[in-house]
Amino acid sequence: MSKAVRGAVRRVKRKPRLWLAGLLLGRRYQVIRARPGIVAFLRSRRIDLVIDVGANEGQFAAMLRAGGYDGEILSLEPVAAVFERLAARAAGDPRWQVRQCGAGARAGSARIGVAASSVFSSINPTTAAADAFEAKSRAVRHETIQIVALDELCAGMDGNIFVKIDTQGYEAQVVAGAGALLGRARGVQLELPCIHLYEGGWSIAEAMAAMQALGFALCQAEPVNFSKVDPVALVELDCLFGRADQSSSA
Image (cartoon, rainbow, N blue to C red; front, side):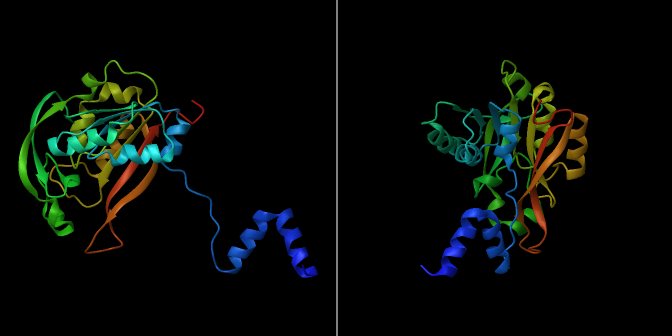
């Protein structure tokens, strides 16, 4: 080993992080800290129960498991064929429970438009913007589904609760039936529109005001998708709210 190589090895052993940063910066890479995501938020609030409203096939819950969350999950999905796939996915996980229903302001039933791509299925009709964004957002059939109010469904549940609501424009109605639950929840995630794909849904401003009135403040925001017409413009955003009066030490 040459003298120059031995000297380089000694420098790496003494200050490996600085050496790596210098190497990357020398090649025009930028060294940045990893951003905290939703699993970090759940850990910081000691969440032990996630209520997953609008679960579809369980993508959100699976993402939490992959990130290391090992607490309880309750996933709600109303569309029969989609629920079957959700149930199959959760079957091997004893801490992941599923229920075939939607959520709203009060218990009852509703007619949901089942889209060609099931992630777009909604009680609310789609807009012209949805057709332009994705042809498979159109309803190909309708199905009558059970609706529950989260306050009734979750009345006996305790612990450190997190609620995720992704109901394709129906978020305001879900929140209207969950006042007591959200009053004790430590966090909430809502999918909110920059461009309305569904009629009658909340605007971001309306959602922010409603969450503030419930005692929450915005903690994180993550892009969901971008416009095909204007690729630099957001269509939807995942907004994560924490209690305004709580910190990670609470």
